[in-house]
Amino acid sequence: MKFMLMMHAPRGTGDWQVMSWAPQDLKAHIRFMKDLNVELVAAGQLVGATGRGTPAVTDGPFPEAKEFLAGYWIVEVDRPEDAYRIAAKASSAPGKGGVPLNMAIEVRQVMSAPPVEA
Image (cartoon, rainbow, N blue to C red; front, top):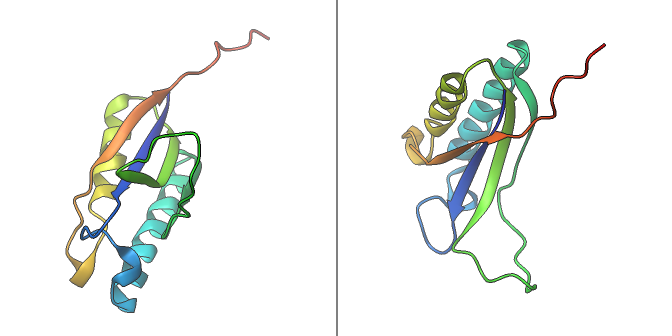
């Protein structure tokens, strides 16, 4: 089963403004995320991932959002509980002063095609 784990960050002046963190706090956060990705690769669970620090905001045909997608993982796991466990670990990433962010991570199952018969 594939799941997308989406890390949303608020816009504006919220605490989740990584570019205003002390350099050592930002480095610790990035190291945590890189280590998590290495762990997922070693477990054969990581399908894809990406993250952003500061979003580019432009006018477009869509209404303005109060948050943006700061990063995501696509994981392949045997049970939904495994995706929730990974999301919980990602949520505990260190923030300012090393305090866990406890950020919300949205977990959604990704549709898959039926297996191809050989």
